[in-house]
Length: 399
Ligand code: PLP
Image (cartoon, rainbow, N blue to C red; front, top):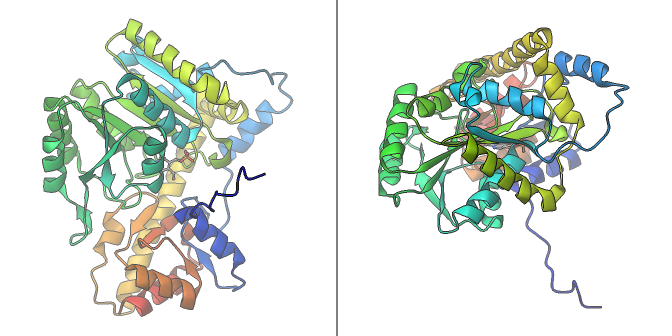
């Protein structure tokens, strides 16, 4: 009778809690720039045309069997090509252990469990700040967390010197979590030159780089360009881990489709690593879901649909990039004397505005604009219909 009496209510998720509050608000002018989900210029969620077409082709499919433990083989193959390159020698040499994962979160969690099992005495270094769930993922997998400096509030840019110092001071052979592109929540990415330095330092320290790539294509509109950091690390002969997600770039959020890969020294090692990843997933969820994986393999496996997808990804990225310019212009037009270049310098889904928690509270209470208290604005929630309203509100609370 007292089984659950001592259980206290868990704290609200900082991001999903924002959406709850937004939904409860009755104001017609309310805006949700909290959650990182793409909206079109009318503020509506989008199903990509390539996905609609793929669904038509899949409809009526006779296949509803279980996927193998490693997931949809075609989907995994195509995912590797996107990240490692179409003609990657690592793919040819079968050096990559890869499995379908439950979107980016699931890929991170699977890797964290793998790290915990095979390198139980290591830590994971995560950037400050980072996507809040990274903390939870590695914590729940039983891996101790450490942080490294990343963001420099004064410049609203990268703390490059601090980052290098922290990489240098970490014990040799540590695990480092890196956002491959479109860093969440800051929108601040290292330049190519900086990535090269980071790569070479991580190499000299014998650290293991794990990339979380939740936004390939979303940052610049160009999938190859957004995978540049990875290609730099590959050139430098690292072994890497990689989480890929189709939530944002294919709009498959709720389908939970992604990929975890680990680049190994040779094929034999890759076979062993893959078998162990499957051994971890088997008692957790047995095998991954089918439908989303079929959508991805259908889109990426057909040159026409893939071309359409690339255009649509670019369309989403361009709309966001355009909104950055418009938001900044509108703030400057209103006579805001604060510096707002970071709005257009930052990249990806988010703008780390630099607003204080108190200013954010005012945005919400006075203007019905919902976002996390760290001042992170989801650019995808901004459109030509609300950008002036938002600029005005930001100006009001920051002047
Ligand atoms: N990693 C980062 C940095 C993210 O921002 C997100 C989503 O917000 C994810 C991973 C995981 O998303 P999903 O599990 O929906 O693929």
